[in-house]
Amino acid sequence: MAAPGKVAAFRLPPLPTIGEIIKLFRLKALKQLSQNFLLDLRLTDKIVKQAGELKNAHVCEVGPGPGGITRSILSAGVEQLLLIEKDARFIPGLQMLSEAAPGKVRIVHGDILTYKMEKAFPKHLKKNWEDEPPDIHIIGNLPFSVSTPLIIKWLENVSKRDGPFIYGRTQMTLTFQKEVGERLTANPGSNQRSRLSIMAQHLCSVENCFIIPGQAFVPKPEVDVAVVHLTPLVQPKIQQPFELVEKVVQSVFQFRRKYCFRGIETLFPENGRLKRTEQLMMTADVDPTLRPFQLSMSQFRNLCNVYRKMCDEDPSLFVFNYREELRQKKKRSLLGSTGQPEQTEEENQL
Image 1 (cartoon, rainbow, N blue to C red):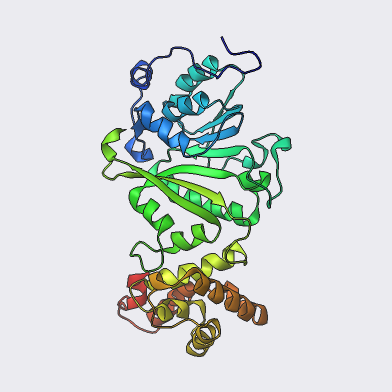
Image 2: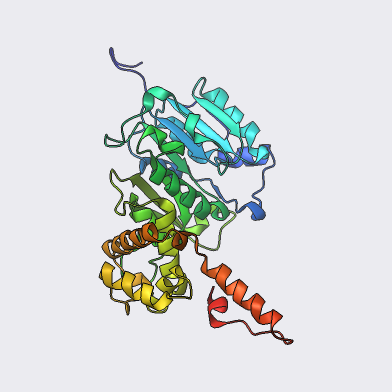
């Protein structure tokens, strides 16, 4: 019995194990959906612990599957748990969990990439962006095929303060392939430094919490898994629109083994390309002989700020597409020649 004046901690009643749930509902991980089940509740508890204090919080779990992490979230004493599951085979097992935690669980059969998160939580949970993060958390053991497009989508939501971030600086605790986790947290000079590093770190504080060995999952993936915690920053490190930052960063990393000058060139049309590239790099004070992975966040900020000014002066710059220019050149070459032209070096690398 709870002590007077104290609320008893929530405990799930006795339930079949995750392994028994899998057998009971004849569940099988589908390779085409990159599904891997985590059966060890000590590990699911450890993942949920990285999210911080969840007592009386509202949580959205992405892709709960057979419900291992779901149990750990409920055991943490959450107020409400929203489950978004694309695979209908898992719904009956999740409904069993819902019945074991009356009034706490809401199940949505849908795709997280298209689900509208703006109305997922009660309005009274909203906080100002400058305040502490709201009592809302996103947690998920993400299928590998979904993890990168989903985090890019959410980073864009962070930049625009919409989607799940309409409520404030909603925190995320997510799993990724170990290599993707390393990219998200990579520092300048690291071989893992990539477009993902810049896009994540300029908008969020990113922590690579711990690694789960592949053999902990069923079926065992070929790679280990990283648990990553992200908290949106009050002020982004690059204060420019998401689309502009993404275009600059993508261009820089287009030829990641070459000097950064080579990638930055692709921001400009062929007519005047060299002059404009030199102007951008000189004004941004970036050494053109650095490799993309060597550039610091402040150098990317300078590049984005100067590029923005150049786009303000010439709006056609922002809509310029280097790949489209290459396609048009190849098309003209085909029309003017009887033979098949070979692919250019640029096309091979792109």
